[in-house]
Length: 128
Image (cartoon, rainbow, N blue to C red):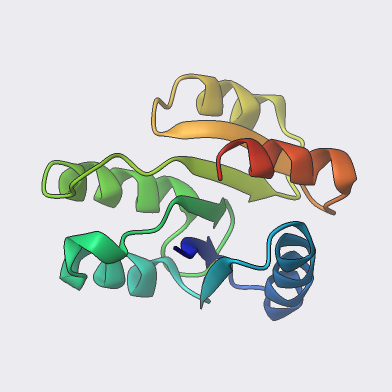
């Protein structure tokens, strides 16, 4: 059965790169791209339960709703979902405060910085 991965990022180039890298690792992955967090939340809340993603890769800095806002909204949805979905935050920010905030956010499994490389992809693979 195919695993679904949500990529939530407002950068189309990032979507292109991560799709290529993920499919090289596992061609059974289905990558759903969302250019804004609101669309991903809408999909999560309207989806029939069996089609939930195995993983969400979330950008921190986006227009309108950022990654932290997404986490807050996801917390409200979590109880209606069949299972918890691991979330990996992916950002170009190397701000220590952001990394500390990640450590205190139970929904986040990891924080990886852009650009992606093979080691960072291994972190993603751990959750698939």
